[in-house]
Image (cartoon, rainbow, N blue to C red):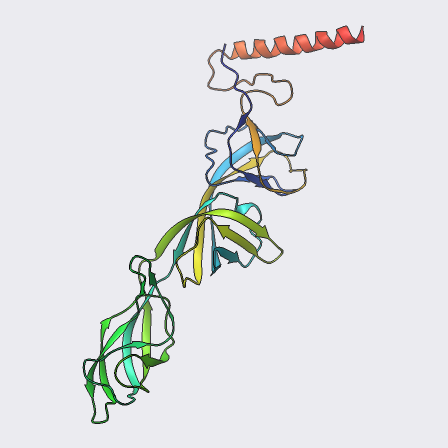
Length: 288
C-alpha cells in the first residue's frame, strides 16, 4: 500500500490577508513540491484551505536606507516575510567631465583636488573613500587654476552637484562645474530580513546586518512562492506565521487521497473506504 505522509511543518513563515485567496511564503521555502489539491493551515487557524495553484514570482521595490533598516514608501502587505533573503542593488556614479568656474588662488601645478559634495562609495577593505581626483595642469601668476585633468573618476553612491567647490590642494577658492555619469553595472549586496513593520503608507524592514556606510537608496528584489487557495481566506489577516501542509490525506480524518501518479490507486481507495466504514461503525455503536 502507498505510504501515507504525516502532516509536515516546513519552517519559516507565510502570510495571508483576510478576503484574499493568496498565501505568500518566505523566500527560503521551496513550495515546488506542493501539488494542487493539497491543504494548508496557518498557525492560529482551525481551517485548512485547499491549494488551487502555485506560482513563483519576483517582488521589486525602491527603498531608502537608514542605519540597519530600509523604508519602502508603501505597505508591502504579504509580499515580504521574516527571513526573506533579499538582494539589494544600488547605483554607482563617476565624474566624467570637469571645468573650472572660478580658478581661486594659491594653487600649484600638480596639485590634486577633489569636487566637494556627493556621497563617496566607502571601501570597507582599507576604510577609505573613493572620491574623484583632479590634477591641476596650469595656473596663472596668482595661482588661479586655468585647466584640470581627471586622474581618477571616483565612485559615488550620490554624485556631486553640477556646481561645486574644490577641496584640497595648496590654494583656495576654486569652484568647478562637474558632469557625472551612471556606471553600466550596479553593485549588489544580499541580506536577510530580521523584522517588518507595516503601516498605511510605508514598510520598515530590519536587516540581519548593516549595509555599507553612506548608502542612501537601493532597489530591493526577492523571489518567492505564492499559493492560490480555492476559497477566500476567512481568518484574520496573518503576517509571518508558521503553517502546516498536508498533501497525501484529508485534514480531519486522515483519509488517503488518490493521486494521478499512483498505479495502485484502488488500494488507496480501499484504505479510505475502510477508514470511513470504521468511523460509521463507531458512530452507530455510540448511538446504540
